[in-house]
Length: 125
Image (cartoon, rainbow, N blue to C red; front, side, top):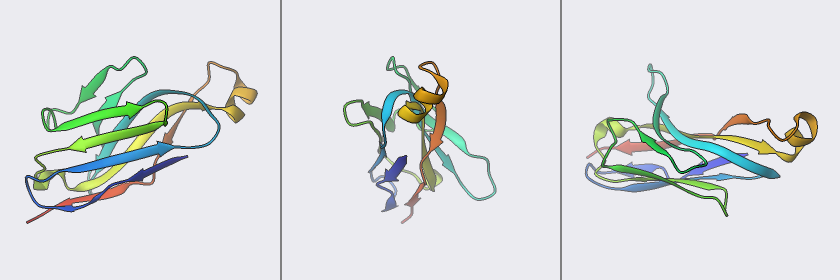
């Protein structure tokens, strides 16, 4: 239900914008977030935004990355500026949401976490 896009290869100092579109019969999206993972390391939180537009960022990306969401389009974005080689990773989006099927089965207070498929970001000269 989550489709991430926008990754690629960029030189240090460059920019990329990642997108993550949620599809299906979605009734409510709570928190959304971006995570990243490099081989041999645990997946780490990069940035998150909840339904009240409270934002959190990893210290390593503060001032360079901006997370935003378009609730009308059920889409999450990550604007990445001043990229450095250490930002190289597979980036995953995550959403805590309620879809129609779960609403019918479990009621309006239910939600579950979904992951996108990941998009590769490579920062290299």
